[in-house]
Image 1: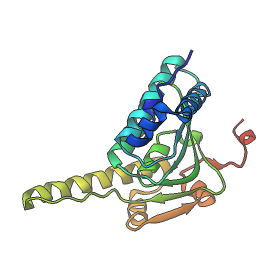
Image 2: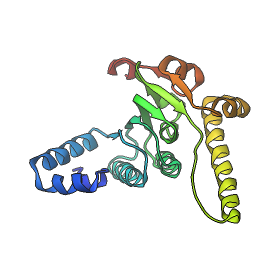
Image 3: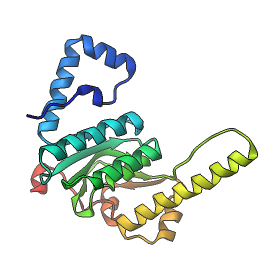
Image 4: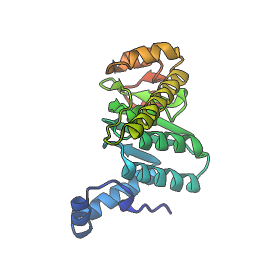
Length: 208
């Protein structure tokens, strides 16, 4: 029997405390377990280390439950931490079960990395979805030498991000670098043409 600890979901501290003491918290835990049993993971918040921990935990549990059965990840996220996005993407590829990604809403910046954790034949989006390709960025203060090191690391992360988009979409690296130089919005139909998704789907029957 699958049981999932609701604390693995990302909650703000005050929400978590209230959730432990309220009927709403029990309902959330029940919903979490129902989703787990349906092998569905919903990513609907900003990408950060707490989200990454929760998603990786769910992937691990589902792998233990059935290493061959499909996992569905539904993405609606404004992005966030590049490191957390890369971590989720890497683990989606690390687990044995195939992982399907369905964008339903917005898939921006670091969330694009999560979506690209699935193979192209398992990547979909709904008609009203949109994507934002956006260069990872960091901000910091410190000595000139430290800032120089940080600048080099930012460039490395940008190149890593662009290479992944290029490899997964079939677009030339130079084209991707040009596209993401500024915020690059891509609506659903154009996302299919760009190579981000296999196709746009309007109802569940199109997946079967």
